[in-house]
Each structure stands twice: as structure tokens, then as C-alpha cells.
Image (cartoon, rainbow, N blue to C red; front, top):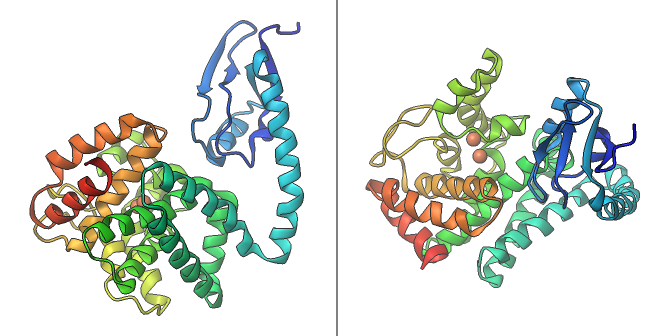
Length: 319
Ligand SMILES: [Fe+2]
Ligand SMILES: [Fe+2]
């Protein structure tokens, strides 16, 4: 029987998107539909694969959204024609779309346009310098072509770190480069967005993950730091930022359980930036993210070496 309320769409049509402007549903029975995504909510390939693996081949959208969906498919078709050339001629060009999104987020967040341009220039330059390093280049490419969450997350953490650092006058090129390198390397050993979203070790227990994934999460800060050191990039202390990016002020972080007095200041700044990005994605870049962050940073991130970066965060984004 033809459903009069919903339009049936193959799940695979979602591949290549990371956000769509209409609510999406799956069908549990002929009459029962459950919403799996809100309009404009971020998602990634893992979500689509999860349903495909469960043999759920179709999702549904409200019939009233039919036109929006068809326009989206048309736009995607045009983009794919262009992207085919990117993939085979010059993969680095894939980064263009990612940078476009990062620029949009940064401006919306209120980061000064000059700062956005300066940081983007440094990020582009740094990525270009990786062309000599096959491992790194391959992994960056993997991030930008198959995993938008990881690409956006990695670049956005470095952009926010740089914006806060510049507010605090930690703004030499050498310092900004540390945050850019750390942004690109810190989650490079994670190949799954869901694992990259884990922030606290307590989340690992709740998620009931296979042992292999738990190991990946626990080891990714030190694995990322090792990959950076192996790459022989000249960027002092970036390895420490990568290694400590899941440490927390109260000592409950991992892998070493350091606290606000023994986590180095640059790493503290990066940890705050990671918290900012996490909240932005969680609250879909809405105002609620900043309310949450103001409360969180002023209550949990003001002691020891977190004090100065926390002030930097507040003057950059809140006051
Ligand atoms: Fe991260
Ligand atoms: Fe991480």
C-alpha cells in the first residue's frame, strides 16, 4: 500500500551527505515510523552503514519535504561530477569543501574574519607540507573523503585553539602551528567517527564496545603522538598536546590521569577547544552550546594551568 504521509528513499542515497534539511525516519511496521535524524542534524557514514548492516535498506521522509529532497539529489549529482575529477587528478582539492564549512562555522561563531583567514592559510600550508609524507597524506585524504565528522572536528579544534591563543597573545606562527599539527594528528589513529566522539573514559563503559575498539580509544592519544614523532615534522611539544588531549583538570582523564597542575598550558588550551567543538556538534551549533560551555568552563576548567586558556576562551566567545 502506498504511504500517503512518507516518501520511501534508499538508504544509500544518504551517502555523501553529512547533514540534510529534512527529518528522516525508519519504518518499524506499515503504520509505525520512528524519527532517526532531525533536519540539519549532523551524521556520518557510520550511521548509514549501521542501518545497511541491519538490512534496513530504506528510510522515509515527510512527503511535504519531497521537493527539498529532489533538489538536494540534483545538487549532489552536480557535485559528484566535479568530485570524480578531484579524486583522480588531485585529491588535495577535496579539502576545499571542508575548508568552506570550517570558514562558515568560524564566522558564525564570531571569530574575527582576519583571524579566520590567517588560520586557514596556515592550515592549508601545513597540509600541503604533508604531501611528502605518504602515511599522513593518505590518512588526511581518508578523513576528508570518507568521514566529514573527523575532518571537521580535527580542523575546527585547531581553528578554535588558534582563535583562543591569539586572544591570549600566544600568537606566534610557531605556536599556532603546534595547534594546527595537534588538530590534524590528535585523532588520526581513529578510523570511526563514533570512537572519535568519545571524550570521557566513563563513556567507553556505557557504550559496551568490543575490546578492540576500547583499546583503540585508550591508545589513540599515544598512537597519534608516535605518528607525529615518526613524521619528523619540526614542531616542538605538539606531541605533548596530542598525547594529553583527553586529560582532564580533575585527573579523571586518560591515558595518564594528569590534573590541572601538571597538564602543560598549551595542552590545556587544546583540551578546552576540544570541549568547545564537542558542545557545538552536540547542540548543532545553536546558542545552547555557548550557555553550556560558559557554565562548564567556569566551573570545571579554571584551576591550575587551565586558568589562562579558560579566560582566553571566555573573552574570545562569551564576553
Ligand atoms: Fe578529538
Ligand atoms: Fe581524541
